[in-house]
Length: 145
Image (cartoon, rainbow, N blue to C red; front, side):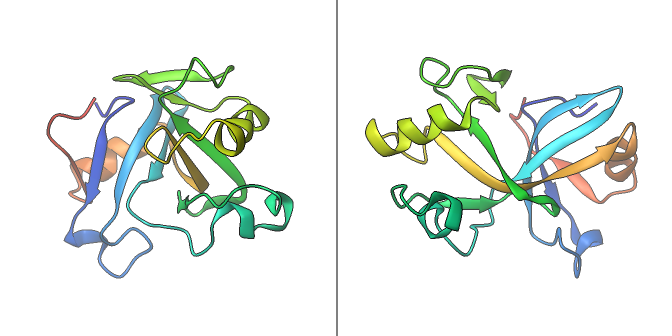
């Protein structure tokens, strides 16, 4: 089973699709399904180039996936700063208070090594990710989770 904290990489089976040459961090995988974020696809604009965040500092965004690209999602390693997040694995956390994350970026100098912001996410129904792994669409990367 692919667990939270695992990284998966697309295989040749996904060439020509949205997921071609992607690496995804899985942040949840339970009886309801799985959620993850593409970690190797920079978004075309930075945070301050989005209308809602035009007063923010420039900060890189990642294209997290094709689902719900109207929202920004947070993965970080700063639970001391960002409250309301859930642990993933290996000191990584998912979610939390966006306003606190923005304050950390704008006023506390946190870097993209501490906080990653994703536009959209990847989602699978229960068992769907495991089926895709079994059919050869994804490989779990070693030393993940």
